[in-house]
Each structure stands twice: as structure tokens, then as C-alpha cells.
Image (cartoon, rainbow, N blue to C red; front, side):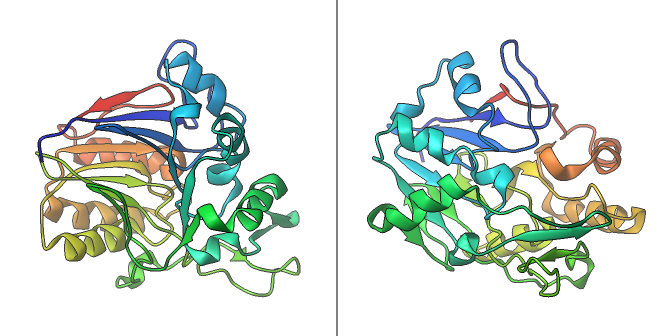
Length: 278
């Protein structure tokens, strides 16, 4: 399709541009033809400031896609809602609105949407699109919907749960990605890839009829993965022949270093303020 695509990283754990600030979170700004979208909104600590530093106006956003229901991807929705006076369409998996906790040595802590985000979603049902299936949010841009968990190597091992007692495991079925048709092939934006990077890419291949994956940008949630899991992921990634690979957010230092070593010609550095143009 003969249209330009511009993706700006507005929230990430690291910073790559003067005037930008970092946080533990992720948000992408997308410009395609006349459409302005956000994929995730970070924690909300830096979204508005980083948008201004990048010369972008949050009030121009018409659509927000939430990759899943964790605070570090949904916390900035209130700022977007304020800047747009509520004139936005929000796409999410139904389970993204559910309770989300994580159990660790210190106990069980809440990691779901902030109350203001949940209130916006619950009181604005007319602008909320909940779907387990893939949805075209604007021409050329789709969500994956719920991602089949085909590879046991990518089973969730971390203690995510849906109750304050930490007894009920959260399979994070709300995890989804966004993929975009470009002249080079499919560009994929990952939130955290809790469903697994390879599961996600295999699902996108199925949805696109086997079109080549050109770019993969975002969080790959390998920060706590053991070496054998990282090695397996790298072996599987080779079959996609990805030309642009950008590990962000929750990928982790060890996994990012391994990816750079395995794919030196494909990997690119990035952080808040980075712009990709297709």
C-alpha cells in the first residue's frame, strides 16, 4: 500500500532523544495517512511531556490500542482522554479490565490498571471495543486478538495472579500485539509479548497468509528468562528473517545482548523519543 508510516516511541525504560524522559513502561505513537494512534500509554508519568518534546499533540489521537491490562501500559490513558476531551476509540481484550496482581517475596501487589484508567473504560462503553479476535483499528493496522499458546517453551513462568491472595494464576490471555502492513512486509509492535514472541509472530503469519515479517519492535518479556529460553527464542526468530529488530522495555539486558549478538545487522537501538519511518 502506498502510504507512509511513522512510529515514535513515547514511553520506554530508556531514553534516546534530548528532552525525553524514561519510565518503566511502553507507548508507541503511530501516524499513518491522516490517522493518529497510540499503542499503549506507559505508566502516564512521561507520556504528555515526551509527546510535546517530540512535537506531537496528544489531542490528535483518535484511537488507543491496549496490549494488555498492566499499569505500565495503561496508566497514561487518563492524560490522552483529557487531551482529546474523550473523543477516542479504545481497543482491548476483555480480560484487560480484570484484576491483575503479581506475587513475589514481599507479598502480592496490584499491577493492573490504575483506578482512573478503569473508570474511563467502564463509564465509556460507547467508545470501548472489547474483542478476543483480531480487529482492524484503521486501514492497514490490526490487533492480533488473543494469541494461541502453541509453544510450551513460552509458557508463563512468573507468578502473575488475579486475586490478592495470590492463589489464582493469571494466564494473561489479554496479551495482544499490533501489526501493520508496509511495503517491506509486516511491522509488528509488541507490548510485553506475555503470550510469547514466537507464538505472537506465528499467529501473525497465520492472520496475514504468510506475509514476511519485516520489523519487530517492543517488549519481549525475557528479562527473567533462563539462558535456555533466550537461546530457544533466538533459534526460532531466525526462521522469520526479520530485517529490523528492536528490543525495548521488558526484554531485559541479558536477552537484549543475546539478540544483538545473534542479529547484529537487524538490531537497532531505541528508547523514548526514537522515530521509525517506513
